[in-house]
Every structure is written in C-alpha cells, then in structure tokens.
Length: 89
Image (cartoon, rainbow, N blue to C red; front, side, top):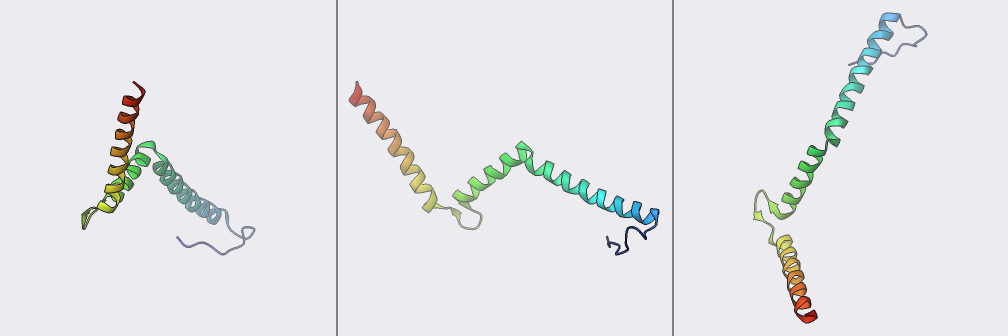
C-alpha cells in the first residue's frame, strides 16, 4: 500500500483512481471497525469481561482483595436496611 508521491496535477487519471480506491478501501475498513466497536452487544461483552478481570485473575484465580470489600459493602447495606426497617416499624 505504497502512497504515490506524485503531484496530483501531474498524475494520470489512472493513478488518481488507483489512489482513491486505496483510500476508499482504508476508509471502509476503518468505518467497519468503528461500527463493530460501538455495537451494543460488543460494548456489553467488553464491560462484562472488564468486571470478570477485576474480580478474577486468569493465573491466580479469585482476587480476594477486590471481592471482600464488595461483599462486605453488600452485606452491610442489607443489614442496614433490615435494621432501619425494624426501627421504623
């Protein structure tokens, strides 16, 4: 995919057409890549994978330094809600 260094004013029509076809092909691939990247299903897959990577390391297994604070927060929230409901009855 060598780019010609000729002056467009001096290029033949065939050279201009060839360069435009190369540019159009490159643009088409870029647009296809962007469409694939922003597809909602692909965005969701990337986000799910990011959450999995946060909680599980492929080599060492579960990352307890990330899991324990989340579980503690969830349990604390549930206990807080239960206590508040009993106090307000």
